[in-house]
Length: 297
Image (tube, rainbow, N blue to C red; front, side, top):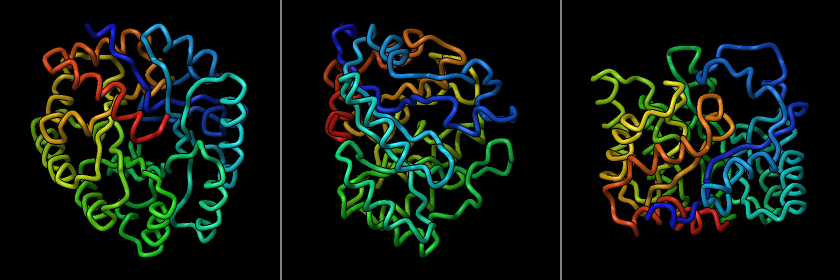
């Protein structure tokens, strides 16, 4: 039955190594471990080869941290790729909501009809290895929130990437901007598998799920364990479905990051195995329908 389910991969990257200083530069400790295997080009033909055998029929490109000031160039490059390969793909671009140039950046990005939203990674952690944002509470900054409000003008969504400790502020943001859809990346990045850590994560996503404009993305669950674990995937996705409901949950592969430890087939089978007990219509919603509607792929 699951082989008949169409898939839109709502979270992946493609890149040329030459464009990514963080990838081609000196190796640094990162949350996904040793990344030598992906310090190379990962182009659309390879992604399609990885994904298409699993009934993936479209996808969503997620910004991949080109150097600052090149966010427009990144989108232009991906747009050219889409036009050349004829693969159905929407784009989530980058903008810095704290920047004085943000309004103009958003205006220019809005001229590209493939752009459906913005990701600015906000995750901050007491462990510097897990830290990306400069501060844990940047989303409470007045300037940041003013620029964030512009998303509604373009009908765009926001890709929300935070840890459990930041979910109260994230829920405040979602409540304050209730007309802006938000997609919680990687099920809220459950990095602490201890009993206390999982309680904190569960409490955080419960609060976020109460904001009906927040959706949950089933992606990146190998980030901290560096493997595909059907048991761990089941534990996380079952809780997310319980809280968000299947109509607010979306699948994304996080390739090629997850290619560090799995094939695409192994990855998607891990998610399909975790969802065996839900209705076929709900599976179709999670793997295809919800992303089709939200990202207009």
